[in-house]
Length: 333
Image (cartoon, rainbow, N blue to C red; front, side, top):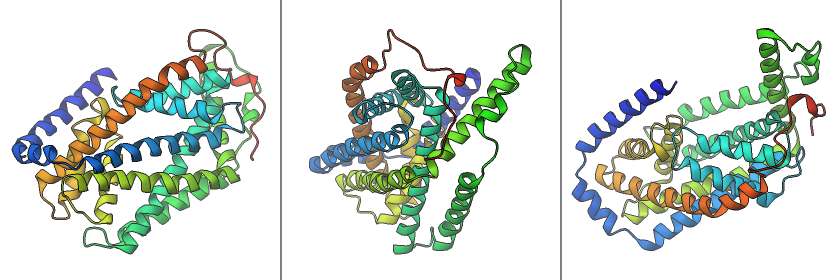
């Protein structure tokens, strides 16, 4: 696994090096050095606000099954995103799940189920924003039909997932197998069914509606941050181009080949924006500034939040997260 990730990182870095050779870095630096300070402050403010919204949305799904407070979950989110900015893969997500599970003394399936529900709502809200942006401002690159149809398909999968009843998570716990490879299979199957049941239970209630409402604030804030970063270097791009850049950068997040996805972010942002006919150097300058401001903001915030988050989670003492067999059955709310 480590060798495969290292190979992926080397391939991505190779592509980044080739892409960098085609860029006029003097023009990029000229744009960066003359960037609008008020616009950069707006990028930082939007990043902070969107991170708070991200934590609040996760808490919506956690509050029914844990005793975690809103402030705790927001601090866990800042600490996790701060680590994501400096580590490979999505290590920060693992950390914030672990912190939440330990602080609440809850089973991992409960916390992961809440995070999965959070991600589903986040993606659905983003699809909704993208569809609205394309319908308002369609282009040759993004005609309405190419966005609306995939959005409807994704929504159909969501409805099917939530509507599916399946087995109750407690049903597979008997008979309990404790020895050999069958025990590991049984435990893994139990965890997955609990995980899916936790996610579905949360997505069926009003919590999903509230979280969706928060997402409708979260994503426009991200779009504002990207738009402000572009304006900072004099790149006046339409809303649909900004949305395309946000889509591209978030898809690039799945690669995570470098710490903070540095280099990958710039490539995907520039590819999205230049497709609309805007100059490459301006696009790269905007990408450099947007990511730099966002990384500095989340790292500093994460460092500030980390001590309180670790203390709240009893990281250096106390009870670990609960085992799968110690909890009550999952119920829809």
